[in-house]
Image (cartoon, rainbow, N blue to C red):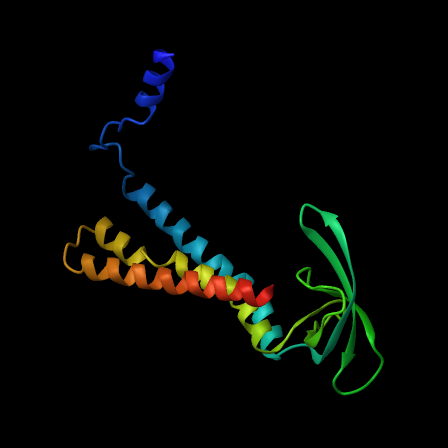
Length: 182
């Protein structure tokens, strides 16, 4: 019994401090920083189509009525609905957001392909902004890291405050977007 506790205690002891040769060199640090920037840009790039749809720049405005939601297991749903364009015309069967419930009726935007409709208005816009807020949050502490990498001591405190504020704003935006989507 005591051997198990000693092994457990040893697992939580601090390891050796990184010294010269144990930190990434200039090439390694450049690769890490490029990966960091890429990680922040990917959500921004993938959110462009959703933002265009949520703001009404593409697609057809109308009203979506969710007619069925089938459980796929593990909390996933396949929802179907009927989209009626605002300008008149025939109602179109479409895929609805998996966050929908049977009987939901609300403003929506039909994709240019005509196969699915997403919520429009304030709730749709907030839901579409979830991914960009996540991407912005990734950049929160990048200024501090750049100051640290280039060994600039002046401005680190301001960079930490900036990082905390940007990360808090990002977290708030993600939570609001997820609540709006639900």
